[in-house]
Length: 234
Picture 1: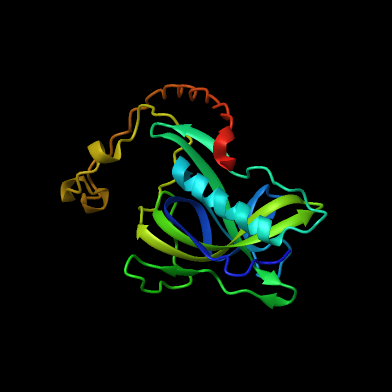
Picture 2 (picture 1 turned 120 degrees about the vertical axis):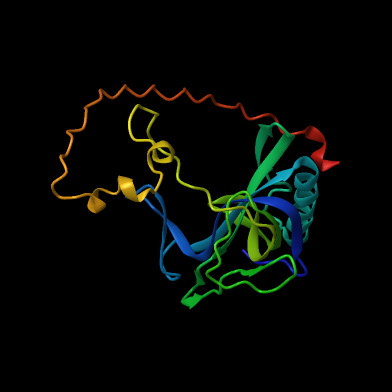
């Protein structure tokens, strides 16, 4: 598997999804999730998934096909399957894909993909890119054929942050019930501070309230994967 010559390509104005660029990560089969790891660990990589529109997907696929054609060996298939995942959203059809860089090749650790702001100023290596941010992505193409399949992987080289979204707060696993309301109960007044009251002042027993059962979360539907357009080879 070799990177093709002059294969650098920029994917502009796409949405970043679950970026892992501040250090290397790997999938932990015991925890069944992606976790931080050392660059020399098996499976260690920097990675960035991204969402693109139909026009962007067609342009990227065209470049990937050209890279594959220029590198293809005699025993390789003439074509490879479209690797993008199709989605349907409020803005129409979109596609997601992934660019990545191994943590090491052999015993030599790689450097993290460079990150830049909109003015092309280099960002710190531990900069935390957030999901939903708009980015430009610089990649190179690596055609391959073997036990893992056939296709063209995107080797992540650099990322430019055009619009940085705020870090998302974790979603609460609970439903709303009667009880403590931070906004309604906390006014910050000194008279409400229990430590400011006289020790001789009587303390009222709090009235117990029966908590209402949380409503079950709504069932999540599943979106069917639409078929890929047939004229992408045109």
